[in-house]
Image 1 (cartoon, rainbow, N blue to C red):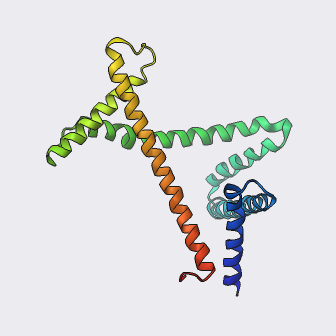
Image 2: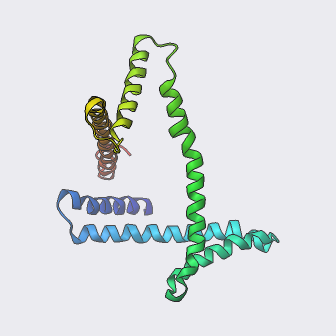
Image 3: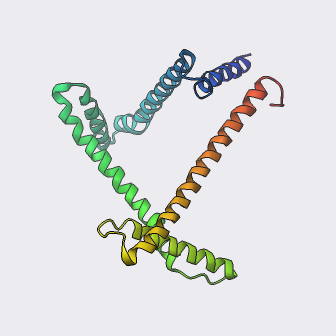
Length: 205
């Protein structure tokens, strides 16, 4: 019984959410939106509390004294709720942002820069004419796109042709990215439509 009730509640909330793009903002959409935010916040609080207890407090109680460092840093973040001591929260937030930035850079340079440069300048060894076409297409597109962003020089003379080609490549790339986003949204809509029909017993679950 509870599974059936859950299905119908999910179906009703889905209709309330889709009432915004299909009609306009209305009380039903705002109710579903606030419920979603509230449930997400509650789940996040419970999950984070459980993680702190499991990964920090429990090892600390078992004798791992070093766990007091992340515990104190985490508590310092809550000082932003007190206007007189908001400056204390800058230190753990700065440490968190710096650590995240460093880890992100380490994981970004090789796949997004180094590997991309190597793949661009490495000629194909197999694949025939199509492989060479793809190689030249990517190489020309990359060089011309980079030249388009050379804002220290006016795009005239020798730079006029390559920068125009670079702009076309950028437009093609953005169009492909937009098309991919639209297809992803339609895939999500298809999944919701399938759920809609399954709850109504029009198609098998």
